[in-house]
Image: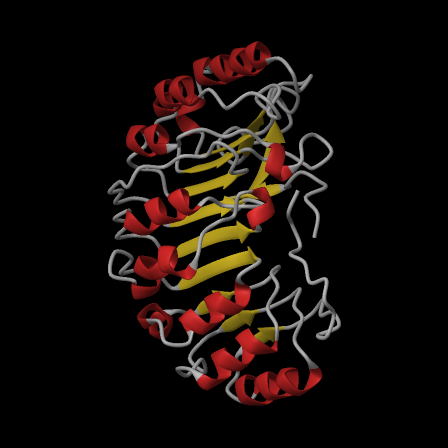
Length: 307
């Protein structure tokens, strides 16, 4: 998997570029995308942000997509200014921070920052997606509005994983963490995930994605007995290094037949275990994605997104 093109929809809305698409896009019905057109001038990004916030229809905007804020490979996003400006979009409910393609900046080169001020400044935010984890920080917070929280990375630090696990998110229905590889800072282990797998701070969670994980087998073993699984409708362990070990643990653990979907695509599971998965879950009506499989015996297993 590569992140080679910009998203065309976000939060159920078509993405429109500001200011290029003014006049042909729906002001209230678009997810407005902001970026520095030259990719190396934060000032231009801030000028566009201020211009959009000053529009007389800014209070109609419900979704924003933040692209390259200028030199994202060596400059963190201006979180303080974002936290001060975004509340002016009074109906803002969905935010993507770092919607940057690999040819603009590889995912593990994207410089991030402590995103806690954004959550504190936007108590009505419902959807937050963050791409890139270099320099990413988070303090445990209580946020009663957030329903979907995604962090895409080639390596997610244990400190961030623990902070997510310690957050109190009573409305969260979807949590997605790209754990990545230790080569790019992904040093979390299953112990760091324990509060998430217990689910006590996530009473509304129905969709859990622990993706792109070098430690996918260990995650699967932990999930086999995790309390949170019983109330999930979707479980996603795709993009990682899942092998027979992890898949067999899922089959031997608690029932998964209540799931609507189990996504394991990009995997290293052998034919015999795949046949068992298909038989046991397929008969129960679970949608099973085991596409993009590779030779189960290969020594050079890899995650789909790293650098």
